[in-house]
Image (cartoon, rainbow, N blue to C red; front, side):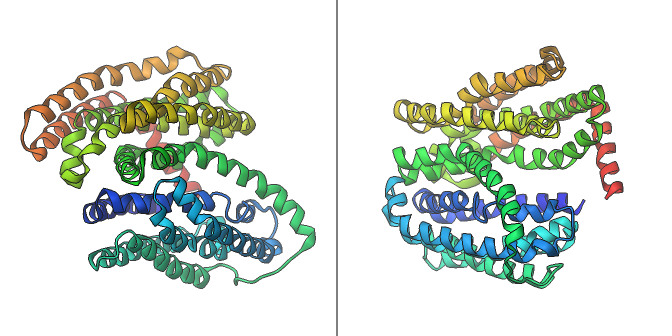
Length: 468
């Protein structure tokens, strides 16, 4: 329960902070920070070579490997930081904003901080110390926000966000060390090195592919359309991700252990998957419809008129958010079945098709074309592949169609009426309010029709907490 609360509070805090900073910075400075953030996420994806997760899964006493994991994490992080520092000018030039180099270099130092506390963070996860982790995460989020806002107000621009992130990461690192279940020590056990790298390197490789799939659009935006358009795209992507933040994380906290518990009862496991899909469709599709239909007043009301051009991307990315939630559920389901290799192949295929689609979309349609490309790839390539994999495991197309047809049918007029409100009302507040009210009614009615599935999911959540 604490992990769920931590996620919800962090998400809403991040959303609120993002709105404030976007209003203060404007598209150009926000785009510069977006370039630095993409660089940070890229190097964090393989930062400590994946070895820290070995602590969570280690069957014996974690003391055996903790020191070695710390050494590997710190050494690899220092090496990665040195590479990032040296390559920052080339990366920023390729992303269309050479002036972002100093921001990238500052924020890249978070890699070293992250690597230094990878072991205590993993130990907390292993020991289910959600209370301590929630405290540290909230300090990290809010302290970084406060420092960033103060520095933005002082006129430091995009560098404010980088410095706020570094300062908060340092404080969070000190707290990780303070509350670590084991003392943070360096060590090096040559007998443990091979199995640790054998475990971690494939995970690091997978993380790089996942990063590439998730951030290829932003890299293409920066490279082809410039930092300002990248800022607009990132803002639209974040706004479209609200349904994912609200609904996906709680369900992903419940779904994997439920699937794991039922994996020896395939019919029950399939029934659980279909119940979750039904509730997700009922809850998410009306929200997606409102965001897509009322994109212009939503962007201008929340972020201000300077961000209005982001609305053309938001319309497409709202639809993509719905695909992402479904793909995450399929991923969790297939991982429990032990076919991670096939999932990895899907990720590679996704990336191979996505990159040229993004380039073509950006070339032909600018910001709107770039945003449309992930939707097209998701609908025409990834969705059929995942459905084929599910059909091989006992599902039918009818199983899914019977659970999503009504939400789809209702969401179409919701999107159309939301667009009418957006076009016909002079006040962005009134347009957003009317569209939100309509979407809320549709959501409530649809969720009510799936109340049996909702009760089942709630019972799974209570079972999970009892087990813990």
